Structures are given as C-alpha cells and as structure tokens.
Image (cartoon, rainbow, N blue to C red; front, side, top):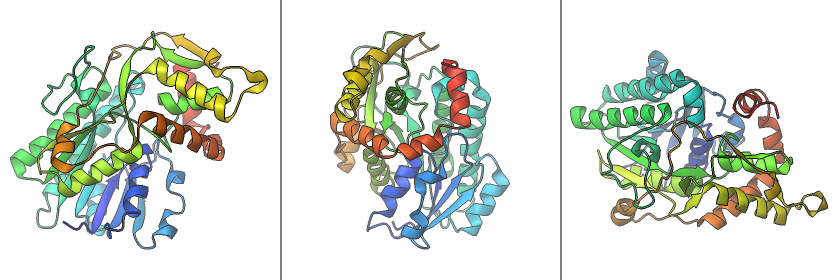
Length: 353
C-alpha cells in the first residue's frame, strides 16, 4: 500500500503535529499530507513551523472544521485524498464536564462526516485510521489490563463521545466494507502538548513557582506513552494492521499522578535549580477531585507486539527527561501559548491564583 494523499485531521494539535513530523521524516513515505485543522484552543500552527519548506510540495494546511460536511467533501475531492488519519477531537475530560456539547459535535458528528465521505469513494480510498483512547474502557481495579476485548464503560462525556465514534468506525467497516483500523492509546506525553494536561502544566507552573495542582490523593494511575512511540505505532497499524481490527497502544509505564509530579520537580531541580535551592516539591497542592475520576488505566498492547512487532522505544524516565528538556529549550513556545484560550482555561479551572 502506497498512500499518495493522506488527510490528517487535527494535525496542528499535540499528537497530530508530532505524527506529521514523524511521518514526513520517514524515507519510505513518499506521499503528501493534507492537514485539516479548525485551530481550536489546542491547535497551534507553530507546531509545524517551517515544515512546508522542509518538505516542498508534500505538506498542505487547510483551516476547516470536520463538522462542516460540505467543506470536508470539497477538500477530499480537491486534494484527491486516498487515506485519512483521524486525530481531530475534543480531548480533555475536565472540559467535557463543563461543556459537553462540543465533544458530541466534533467527536461524533465530525467522525461521521469523514466516514461518509470516505465511503462514497471506494475506488481510490485505502485506509481510515481512527485514533481513540483507553478511557472508553472505564476504570480498572488494582489489577488487570485493558485488552481489545474489554467491554466499553465510558465514565465522562469525553470518553462517551470517543466510544460512540469508535463504534461508528467499526460499523462502517462491518456494514459498508470501509477499510478501517482503530487504535486505543494510553496517556501521551512529549513535545508540543497543550498545557492543560498534567505533565506540561506541572512543568510550566513549577518553572514559575506556582502551585502544582494534584487531584484528590494523587494516587490515580495512568499508563504513559511517549508521543513518538505512539506515532510509530499508528503508522505501523496503518501500513500492516488487519482491516476492521482494533489495536491497543500502551507505554508499559504505569504511574501514580503524584509520582509523576514529584519526578518532574526533581528533574527541574536538577536541570534548573530554583533560587535558594528550594525544592519544587514544596509547590505540590492537593485539590478537590474531579467528578467521575477513573482510578486506574493500564493498557495491554500484546496484540500489537505479537502481530505487528511494535514495542515502545522510550521508558518513562527517558521520555520524561526528554520532555522536560524540550520545554526548557522552547520557552518562547511556552510564552506564546500562554495567552488567550489558555489563560481563560486556567482561570476557569483553577481560579485566578
């Protein structure tokens, strides 16, 4: 399979922009990427600054909303799209609790629009890959792992909307024969992540000497996946995965939230010591837990490893060190993003402090 014109939705976001960087750098990929992004609060074109010059004729950006079916069809036809990698989504649990409507529109209706357009062109369409989350499975107890056979039990508007989109993708394969693959990943971290998420939020607050908010007792557990490992897994599935199948992608790195916050504090104290030698752990502040906060997620990626040979290259300590280093080396990116939507979000979520 050789993709000529790949539509990447949400390509200015965290994972999408990393995927575009990763894929264009691959010698075996000779196609063109059409990045469709409506540039909502987490979409940042600066994440891809200079990429069109670095890969002349192989990158196109189109500002568009996947909920606009007519416009999406026009883009699909104009650029002769033969594959879609679908990242575009509203993707933060806290936001979904405050404003669930946008999650329903983007994550369900937007996905439906893309599936319909792809279904209308079976002659040239090669693959629809849908990126999803482990949150659709609900919460685990102290033991066990999510597998591809785990029943869906979403507990937030965000995870419910992603579960609905997953079911649509699966149904379009079963009903219409659309060539699809689907991946459910664990928590991603790495460069270009919008600072509403735990790791970049802690890095930024710690650098500024601000409180480091930790929900509840801090013992909620997540499996952590370095974003470049995720990108490689996605491309592996798109190239070699069985059509109609789901693949879990995990980092083999279960961590309590409080442990992650402490690790970031220690790394920053090592790399950029605070004035007076103060430990940044002193900034940790426990805040009221959010509603429906799942206790533990953990991914079993044995199917992906067994059938396609993928495993994560980064351990959590190496990946976290790279991530902290990236944010330290890109202070100007941080400064520019800390305006407008980001500031409003921080005020709404954590108050003026």
